[in-house]
Length: 233
Image (cartoon, rainbow, N blue to C red):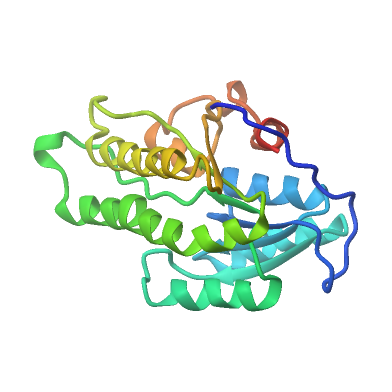
């Protein structure tokens, strides 16, 4: 990740009518996305957390509110192309911009040989990891530019070409390729786009790929979230 400049995050504490920094986090209900949402909220950022699981989002919201933070919950599926325009219009009407966009949502299909993959799983991977990402970029772009110093963050997990990672590796690589194109296109006009490679963590996604792995040997999601926020902002 190329570090360009730091964003001065607000001191903890803000009111609804005068929010100093607004962050939109996809996949905010669990794992690394949840850890990022919590870390940003600790620093006084108004977090908009999007995920499919309302119950899990509410649990993250409880953690954030316990420390006097703020998160607005958006229960939605990023592959639902009809819901995204409404969601981003709602963000625009309420806050007028997005200062930070973190795309942590991802679909992790079961590992399988390339010659024997489930077409349904591959289609879900394409729709979530590629198509939805392209749609999110299109909707987030203008709101990030409205910030004047908006930054979008994508999470790299390079599995392209690895055995049994055909569906995940190819679609995750395509997602990052989209992000890198956006980064080059917006270099002079904004928003700033960053690619962050987290260390291996005991998330649900990784456990699906490596079910027998000793999670105690992996990085703590909270520590990695802090590292991301320190590095990017």
